[in-house]
Image (cartoon, rainbow, N blue to C red; front, side, top):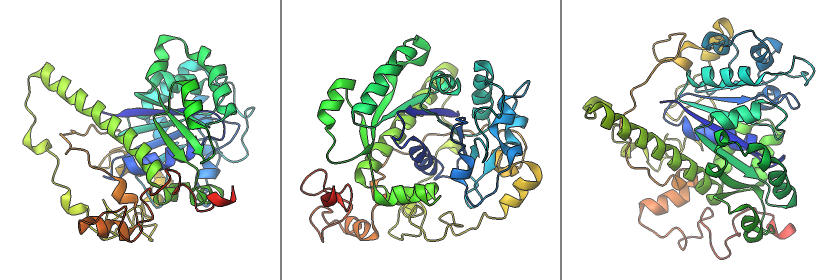
Length: 382
């Protein structure tokens, strides 16, 4: 069953970067995801795809200003990553601004989210900070999992205090949101800030390499630079999604009185998690070949299919149908610790040999000493 994940929060907290990293993690098994950003103040298509032209005909503004929104209209306005066709993008195009289209209707925003969610396994809604943009409250209302990212400072706290009353209605499920400290640095007073807002579920630390990916137009490459604290927060989100899916499957089995078909059982993926840094499951996030999806196959040619017919058929259906597929989702194996996937080959080799990551050869991706030592290489310069 498709899942809608809403990410909202204070300005400059790293929401869009987190959405890109989350999309790469969710599509590691070739499941499909769409990221939607409907903030006309900062058109995201040229930010996500600086080298992949996306004209006004691909803009989400044309969808939101339509009379009716359906899956075929959305499919024709999804821009698929050229080198990673499991992720589709929807946003405003370069040069557009809040006056380029009529004001968005709340009902149309809900239609967009509902129709887009039926196309893929995961729909990620990257919200702007302003609640006056109706897409943000509509996304919060529609989210199966809502993630709130705040800068752990006075700006983040006062942003939350200003917007909390606007989300008091029960349909926004405010108390169920996960909260993360974004762009976190060692000098932030997390305990004090957490006490004021009710606590953080995790930290998304600032990193020089992640920041460089954002400034150089490589946001979907940033996942390989996440340190242990970032990946711990990412894993917590993935765990929550898996628990939600498991609960839904169990409820469905109880209601229907069916047993889990053997053909739906997930295969043993143990062999995927090898020490080869270019093998998917352990190192596709570390591969040096941007056109490879772990197994070495190039998917660049599928972009040509998208340019001709709106989006490659296999983005929506394995049988090249133009409409969404409903995959039977069997029981997944117990969730494993994914931290090793993001760690260096040295750390993975140590782990495979049964050595202690924290003490053997000074593994760079494992916290040692102070809990903030591994946040950034230039911490001493702060």
